[in-house]
Image (cartoon, rainbow, N blue to C red; front, side):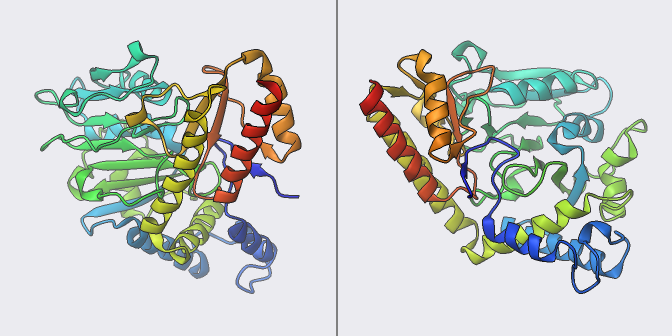
Length: 359
């Protein structure tokens, strides 16, 4: 029996995609072998990779003056990849700190550049986002980096920072493909696949042409945007199964109506859950309303001693992976693209019944 999987990542994948992958797992395109066994240099796989890139460009609306790269190491590798490709040694780079993943990116960047934290939400317990006027690049900064959605704290930027001529860099691991974005407002977008794009390991990098070819000599080849772009992301063996599955997911997004339809679907799911939390004295969401995430909804119970009972009863009801991150506690429901509205409705119904019997 399939459960409703609220995991923050690796996350639920669309059932139609999983079923197609299962049907092709041992015999892909009539070749008598799995896509995981086919050479990445073969005509069949090269065509699949090219199709996946073309679909990503179409679905995401990527302009012609941007490269689309499929890299390895997840988003964490790009914590180093961004400064190594965009900043000269000793140059200032600007960061916004809104939570755990921002902090990790900042710590890694400090190994390669002079980091200036232009806005820091630590005093709020990472329950807020800064006002737009706070997010301004410093003189001479190579770029300004932010995390539009913090998976752990459930905090999301309600706006895209205006950085003028300074390239804006975004870790969109938790929000990619969840709604339309204006790619031209960013210098670099990167995102791990394991939320909305497929299995862990694959990382999407969308980088503007003028930011390619500026890497430092010591940049590892697999992190060098210029080298990877010249080799169509195949300088080394790429994550072939991840690229294949991403292609299937992009077709699924297209079939549902593209990112405008996905945005409406995701907005409805989030509003449904937040409405249930706000209508109750038994549940609470700690994030300021304007900064609430569509993708990750943390909530606490009035009596924390009931947390284990809530989680156990939820699992019995087929609602799994609701435990909050160990650094935050409580509960967290991740509502990525593959989570249907029926799953959110089932969670809300369970929460109401649990409150009735335990309040």
